[in-house]
Image (tube, rainbow, N blue to C red; front, side):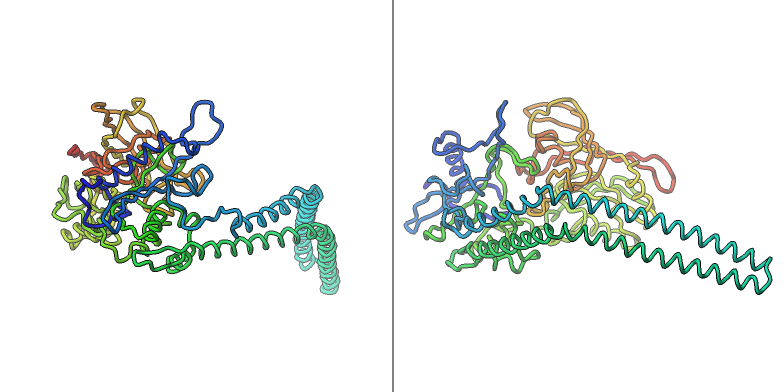
Length: 547
């Protein structure tokens, strides 16, 4: 390592290219993972396996001693081979799995409560009371509904009799009829109230038998909730993190000022905090950091074997904010305007709308930190335009065609075409490998990763429907050029559908979120077809990609 040039600043952990020293350290660790016999962990599924494979995130931290010697530390996220401690890796910040720890003791208590809860829920008498109460309730509702229907019919009959009597009877006879009808109405109301009372008391007796079980069940669940909350808070306070000045801060205090104010599950167990904690405890100067995925990809996230990834934001950003505070660090590229010096080409324009070619690495609309965008540039160019201007968006990294409406009504009509999916778009992408097959459809719902925005994860339970048609254009040099025809328009849809194992399983070249960072994302919105909202002419605009 001594022959390498040291970086001037520490790695910005949320967006980086691994330093050569980090790559050297990672290669050594990967060689160890390939050949070690110290422990067993199933990273891959083989044919006939019944055990589930679990890939793992690993990290390396290049460090410098006080006498300027270089070395590296290694860590894994979570547990490895069901253990927290392995000789090649730094220890956890806090070992919750120690036999005598409050956590292990507390989990045993919670497990006993869970067994008691399970015992009640599986008790045949409890199930019988639940079924009987439901049957009784359904019967009550049915009978009372029938009685109300009868009363309604009787009311209508009395109304008809009253109307007919008023027209045909003498005043004295009508008065007698009216009193009779009133008495009948009061009698029906009294009978209905008595019926309701009878059934209410009957249901109460049935419910009382069920409540014996339900009260115990509720008490156990409340005890479990209280015990879990206590363990959780105690756990948060046991995770105490250092910074380079050896200033301490607990996990609880670190997350207190955040939006959710409670640390997410697994916070503090990632590789990066473990590495920095060990370095600060042992007076080692952090030089460069890198984290990589090893093994099979998870079902939801997109993780590729051997690919390098930034630290997650949901769990690690608050922790690393404390640990790295005050250290000289690489600039945050997300605070730099990627559109600086770039221009937007106008491909088509008339008095109602225009089609522009957005450069790669250029925001469609203003971001949190960067305001320069297609929208801002259009507002500056057309100060008298009305409405939202941008009809749709492209990812910041994606280049290609965007529709701009100069008038509010034009915007509304074009938006309607998007809603009805009559607008046709075609994208060109260059993928980092050979795709199997010649074309087809990808149907993978996804949603934002709440712990690592803006990354998306595939989620069949809560994800939004996302569908893409694709076809191969050509293959060469272990790369595949494809057409994408998005049927829906979800965030990062084409990038996710390309990279995910249930999609094409090959990321787009230059994809810094789901693949490997490059000069740019090789994804381009090449053509768009739409009906002109004024002339009704069928419009088709195309601009070839630069790659």
